[in-house]
Amino acid sequence: MLQLQNFINGQFVPPVAGRYLPNIEPATGLVYGQIPDSDATDVARAVEAAQAAFPAWRALAAEKRGRLLVRLAELIEQNLEPLAQAESRDNGKPVALARMVDIPRAASNFAFFGTGVGHFASETHFQEGLALNYTVRHPLGVVGCISPWNLPLYLFTWKIAPALAAGNCVVAKPSEITPATAFLLGELCQQAGLPAGVLNIVHGTGPGAGQAIVEHPLVKAISFTGGTKTGEHIARTAAPMFKKLSLELGGKNPNLIFADCDLAAAVSTSIQSSFSNQGQICLCGSRIFIERPIYEQFKAAFLERVAGLTVGDPLLETSRQGALVSEAHLLKVQSYIELARQEGGTLLAGGERVRLDGRCAGGFFLQPTVFEGLAPNCRTNREEIFGPVVTLTPFDTEAEVLDWANGTDYGLSATIWTRDLDRAHRVAHALHAGVVWINTWLLRDLRTPFGGMKNSGVGREGGLEALRFFTEAQNVCVKL
Ligand code: TXE
Image (cartoon, rainbow, N blue to C red):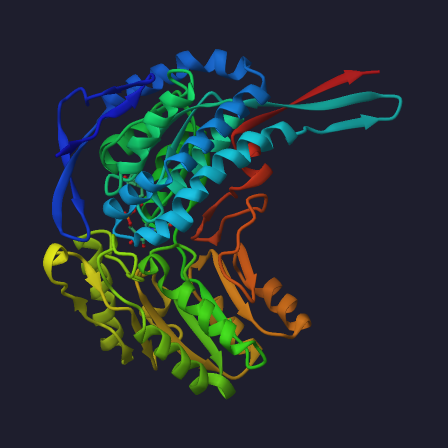
C-alpha cells in the first residue's frame, strides 16, 4: 500500500506524530494508500524550511527562478502518463480527461509563470520638475497555498507557480482527498533541482494541517480554492493577522441560451459545461436557461447527448463519466437530487447511483441528472451542488433571465449563447460574474484575471494579477 510522505526542505519525511489517514480510490470505494495526517508541528517545520530558503531564492535572478519552473513544466510533460493515471485513480476522473486537461495544464502553469515573471514590470510615476516615484514589488516571504480535490494538480500548481516565480517560498497543502499528484510533484522538484525549502508540501486535513498554515504568523499570504464555508472560516482567521488573502470559492453558474444561437454548438458545449469531471468544476454551468422558442428543441438534443454519456471505470478510455470523489460527496449530491424532487422538479434523466460490476462494484458513480420545472429561486437553483446535476428552465425576456441568472449568492462564471453581438456584450456586462464566456466554455488564457464576485470569492488569480498578489508594492520617491 502506497504510503505518502510530506516534502519538507527538499526531503520526503514522515509526519512527526506518525499518524496517517486512509486514501480511498473513488472508483472502487477501497483504501489504496495512506497519507500523513500532519499537524501544526509538521507545518512549523515546513515554514522554518521555507523561511530559511527565502533569502537565497528571492536573491536569485527572476530569469533563473523562471528556468527552474520551466524545467518543472518539462518534467511534468515527460511524466504525463503516470501523473494522469495517478490523478484518475485518486480522484475518480476519466484518465482521458486527466491526460488531456489536468496534467497538461499543470505543466502550462509552471511554464507560463516561469516565463511570465520575466515580463513583470513595475510602474514609475514622474512628477515634472518635482519627483520620480518608482514601484518595487517585493516577494512576501513564506506563503500558504491550499487547494481542493476537483482539479488536484491543476489547481495546486496554479497557486504554487506564481508564488515561486515572484520569489516567495511556499508551504502548500493539497486536499487530503486527492494527495497523490502533489506527492509526485515533490519528486519532480528534486529532479528539477529546485533548492531545498523553496516548495514544501504538507499533507493532512483542513482543520489539522490547513488551519495550522493559515494561523502560522510567518505565513504572509494565503491563496485558497475550495468551499465558500471554508473560505469564510479562513478569512476569519487570517484577516485579523493582516494576511493577504486570495479566495476562489464556489459557483452556481448560469448558462443563457438565446433562440438565435448556434444550437448544435450550444448543446454540445453545454454537455461539457454540465458534466465534465462529473460536474465537479467550480465553473460548471448547472443552471441552463433556454429561450422559450427553442426550449423543446434544445431539451431533446441535450437529453439525447446525456443518454450517450458512458458512466464507467475512469481508467477505461471509453468512460466519459467517472466516479464522484468520495462517498460523502456522493451522498451530498444525492441529497440535492432528493431536494429537487421535493421542490417539484421533473426528472428528465438520471437521478440514480450507478452500480458497476467487477473492480468498480463499490465505486461512487452517479448518473448524469437533468431536471426541469423548478422555480429559478428554489434551493436547487441557488445552492452549489457540485455534481452531475443540472436544471433546464425556459425564459421569455432578457430582463427576466438576467434577474434569474444574478439571483444567487454566487458570481463566479456565466455562459451566453447568441449570435447577436450587441446582446452578447450587453448581457455579459450585466451579469454578476467574474468570468463570462460567449459561445464557448472554459476557454482559458492564463493571462486573464480569474475569480468570482459575491460569495464566489475575493481577489483574482492569473497573469499579472497573481504576480501582484504574491508581491508587496513599495513606492520609492526621489526628489528631483
Ligand atoms: O472543500 P474544502 P470540501 C465546494 C463544493 C463542495 C464543497 C465542500 O460545493 O461540495 O465546497 O468541499 C482545506 N483551514 N468546492 O469540503 O473543505 C481542505 O483540506 C485551512 C468548490 O472538500 O473547502 C482542502 O485542502 N484549510 C471548489 C481545501 O481546504 C482548510 C472545489 C478545500 O476543501 C480548512 C472544492 C481550514 N479550516 C469544493 N478546512 C471550487 N471552488 O472549485 C478545509 N481546508
